[in-house]
Image (cartoon, rainbow, N blue to C red; front, side, top):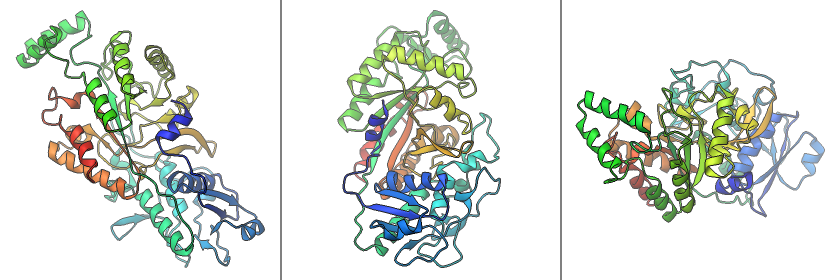
Length: 454
């Protein structure tokens, strides 16, 4: 998928005739440029320009936002914190202020049209500043939920960044009576991480023989019987969900992306041999249903760039197309190094931005946002597409029942719909049958059918 196709998929275009804003700042700031593009162009779908020339600002016919401490008549003022005019990183974390069941940062003590510096607040989260700061990693060297400021304030289940922007929009509408913002549309995108192409099929003689022996030693005769019936072609492989799920999403007009692991033989990478033609057959089926293909870079690819290159090339060859979408296996993602590796290899979007251990909005938003590199203080062309829920967070980490999982997912969808954002979920091939997690097989279809009724 190229950038044009990606932008269409994610609703990133600004329509003709959209309102325009001009923002006055006393200083140049790449950080302000970055966050204003996200707020106005990606979320609010309007145009925005920044100027440091007061005469240009005052003479402009656009809607005016004064991001300075100066008093300028007939303009909407937001008093700036210093964050957007700094260079480099600080280990000081912003103070969270809880009000009306929401959290705020960079509150203004002096009067203005807005009670806090929304630009700095949004920047802190979408730039992933807190991931550039020192934090305690989990056993897989990940930034996980317990390190998140939002999680610590029990507000990770709300897209607080999107809510802040909605509050800004409401205040701008009150101030500029004649403004008419375009309406965003709530959208659902389904993503599936394929860690193991099949449960029993295409494993080769030695691997299959070893698995049979393991079943016998564990007296797991149910698994032995299931393996036998699949290998004798009497029943379908429990992980063979590619036709049914793709057809379901096509019928409901839900964009569907599969991320395929393309390495095997290690402790954490256990799929079918990537050289197997089984992948080619699966790719043919999902393409017939208009689903997309991305790479699920293997466990150590985040620290070994040669693995990423090899896996991307292998997948591109088998899929017969360029591979530009990714989500890291085990969500092993280092904000300082992983994006650079992805960009060097032509990836245009990464879908890793979420938590493994908990549902929630890792960056506080449901909208896509570009990578900000603090090493160069520049916005880069890699787009992060956040998800708000992964299936394993419910039954691996939280041990929730299927009904509780469905309720949580629907609550997250409701929150995203309130802000007309992008609801992205992550399921795995193993969740669609009772093979490993009995009772959870119904969640996927029930979720998407119930979302229609929200």
